[in-house]
Image 1 (cartoon, rainbow, N blue to C red):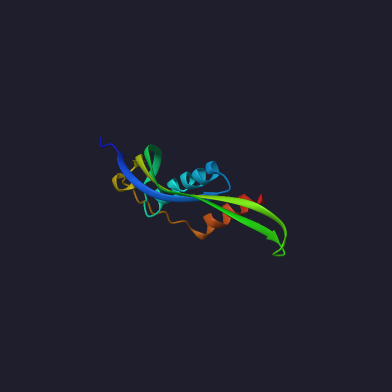
Image 2 (image 1 turned 60 degrees about the vertical axis):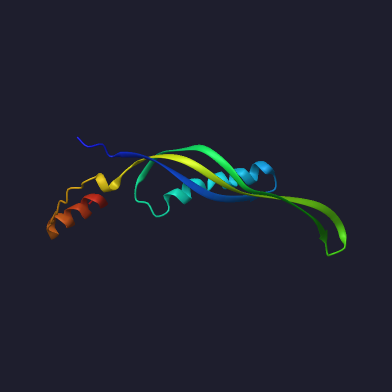
Length: 120
């Protein structure tokens, strides 16, 4: 019997931003699964991060004012771009063979199903 699970290693580049350092990193990490799943028809069982490399980490500070003059306050915004090395365990859909079964139902059978569903 052939195994249908496969393991492979990939590298994903993601970026995130937020009001705190933690929120910027969590925003970036939350995008990993979506980026890996894009363009793949496999079913992912596990995505394990192996290593994280920081490509850029930026802290932006600016002054926000109401009506351009009033109530100035300092605001901080963090942005990170990271390279995440992951190990993926997935079910390979290319290795799964589906059996095609054709079923023909008559009009009477369809009508009986509809009547049964409606409770008539």
